[in-house]
Amino acid sequence: MTAPISLNPGGSLYDRIGPDALAALVDRFYALVARDPLLSPIFPADLTLTAEKQLAFLTGFLGGPPLYHERFGHPRLRARHLPFPITPERAQAWLACMKAALRDTPGVAPDDARELYAALARVATHMVNAPSGVAPAAGGTP
Image 1 (cartoon, rainbow, N blue to C red):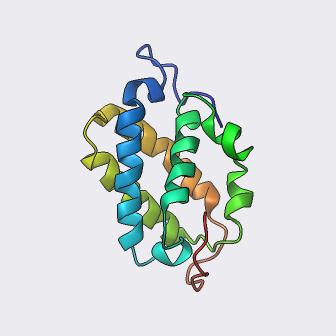
Image 2 (tube, rainbow, N blue to C red; image 1 turned 120 degrees about the vertical axis):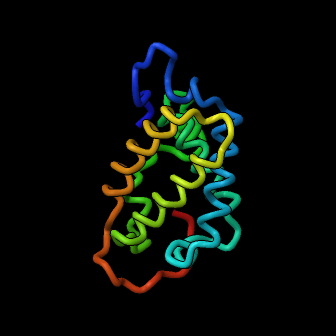
């Protein structure tokens, strides 16, 4: 998943958002995840490595350098997340955190935020691996 999301004349989504705004987005996002009662149980208390991996993944996913591949190998998103019960409710909570982070991150234009959110909504749906109501797993690094 390292191809640009769109072939917009303004460049890839990574080019349009830029590395600084993307890093700010990831920071805002994980601050929200840490406080979310549905999400925090499946994440580690220290989100530093998780945020680093997310930033590396998003960089390549949005058309920037393939940082995740270089540092961690192929993303294998679904396989890496299988140890964590991702219910439809958790996918929606994850998307709600992302939507709020996108809204509150300066430097992410509204059109770019909508495009990124739409792409991540498809990913979140794909990540669901447990039915509603599954008990939380111990924290890890999704």
